[in-house]
Image (cartoon, rainbow, N blue to C red; front, top):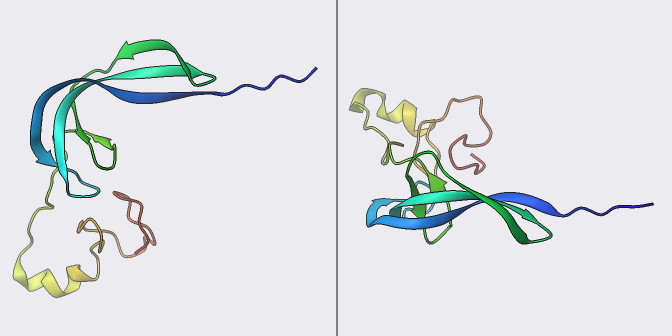
Length: 111
């Protein structure tokens, strides 16, 4: 006997608390402060919902959820190490990345 199971867990916006209060860390578009809920789905049908712990920022463009205390834009550095750090910055999200990384740990893009 063979059983086929399709299920998953996702986050969904429950309520928008403040609209357009920040910028997305991935695509730099407007992000809203939202209450969210986690949803367990079986065969694409919501089975169980439970609320998230604290409000998150949500981008309507790329559908990314991220904490509101995540710094954006990245902190500025002094000009003496600017030439060195430009090689250590992700070209997509402009965050500092360690030199041995091949992919950005923040946005996942190749460096």
